Length: 150
Ligand SMILES: [Zn+2]
Image (cartoon, rainbow, N blue to C red):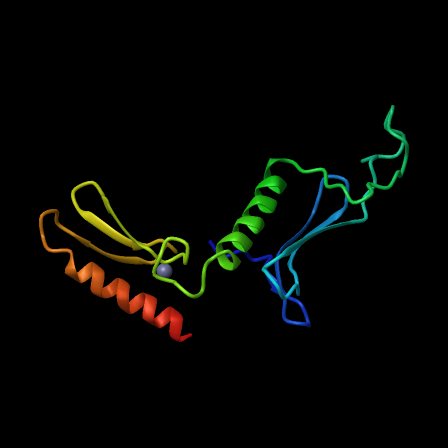
């Protein structure tokens, strides 16, 4: 599912997501420029512990020191942004047509048909059970070849 919060920095790095937590801190999940291996930054900037001035037991305006305070929706966004980084940068580019490469062929039973997908989610087709699966393999090979050309 494409995320409308995804953006690209002026230097060309992906912001996988960018949102505000419960106490006003800005949470940014950004691709790092580290050259040796893929890395991601999780920036938490701003925000204070007291949601409203005068909240009993919580000092007013205390800085969050880089901590994010997340509700279920915000935690889901953080998880999805990290999942996107892992999926897109963790794959082995030398062997795309493997599980580690992120593009293995997956065939499953639907209600009354076989459904073929690439591991990345691309639908490759549906067929009646007990019919040859060659067409799935050909579409999958074409899909992987197109990916490695691009
Ligand atoms: Zn794929």
